[in-house]
Image (cartoon, rainbow, N blue to C red; front, side, top):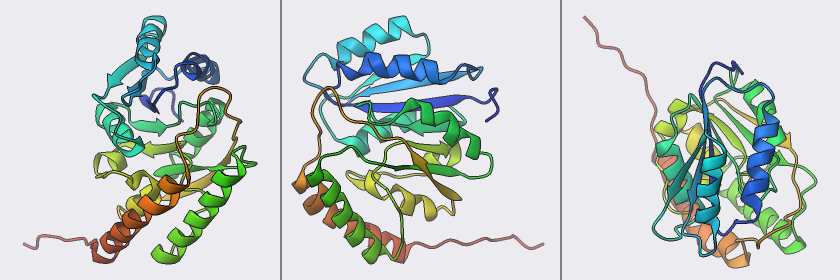
Length: 239
């Protein structure tokens, strides 16, 4: 990636007070050659611990940090949307705050951005518990069958986007799980790329069987309807 281009990192967080200082240090270390203009947008998604306080302290320590705080916990789709709306970068990268995404992978994704519009991470050798892994496999299988698509890991938050594709993106609650489909509807050129996945050390996972299978099924039907009814065309005014 051209280090002259502006870069925005969007990081939603819900009760991640212990992980954030480690994450910001890793992000800083991941860019030995810094983009000339960049920002890290931390979104506090209605945390009930000291996450907001920690974010504000990190803002004092790192001049490139911006802090957005939501009035209550809305979930990942809303927090991502809030970060996307505030991002000013030509390229926008999203990642989790729980340290399971590795910031060292970000420059690798950015290298592919000139050729592709979106680069999405595929978590290899996942460190999640068995129940989370098996529920993900079931959900992925149902999604692929219903949408007639094949994605290896839509649940990985680590993704890089060219700015126009998130400017045109309309998210609803829960639709972060279907970002590749929504982006394909914009004719985005998408690359899947293996990324590191790490064990959670601090805090608790926000996912369980119900919010991995039951609620997303309704969202899946909505996305299928949108995909079927979506149209894309080119036009030219004739003289």
